[in-house]
Amino acid sequence: MARGLKVLGLTGGIGAGKSTVARLFAARGVPVVDADALAREVVGPGQPALREIAATWPEVVAADGALDRKRLGAIVFADPTARARLEAITHPHIQALSAERLAALAAAGNRLALYEAPLLVESGRWRDLDGLIVVTASEATQIARVRARDGLSQTEAEARIRAQLPTADKVRLATYVIDNDGDLAATEAAVDALLRQLTSSV
Image (cartoon, rainbow, N blue to C red; front, side, top):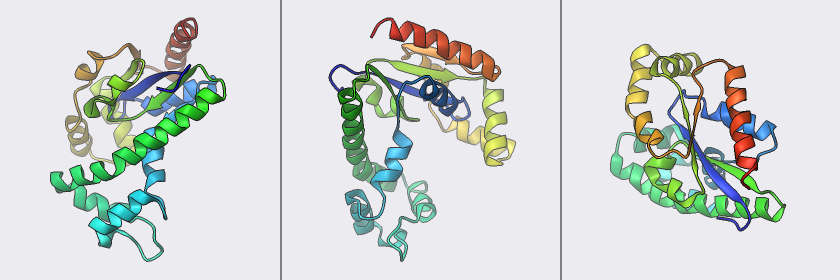
């Protein structure tokens, strides 16, 4: 990791509220590097990753040179081999960009930052960080949030949750756990308590 900067991973299952927790930390002055945002950035027009994707699947690049995410998604989610190929293309670019952003944060004098990513545990990337925060919520809460956010049926929401690594497996690897099953005030209190703990040690 970037010298002088403590970087904690932030992850959690779908609907657990990982992004809410990230926003709360950011509002309290802790910079957050969002892996999903980096993933979108590295496949932007003119980027090397997009050129590699276009060479593999020419049909997923629109006439204006932009990536047709829906068409690419239809290909890679139906074929594990294609998904692995896409990850092999994008992940090195995402990691390089994340290292660049974290180095810039360190150079700016930051002592603590979060790296927010949904697949930190699954990818093994959590091992490269200085700790892991896992955001949790009950399955009923996750389902309710996913249905409200994405307009899914109960069955669709359950399927998405079942497709992910169980939260208990992530919690076993966690350095810190934030329970986000309650209201926003409770989550804010949990974030404040963890931030006090973290800032006393960096």
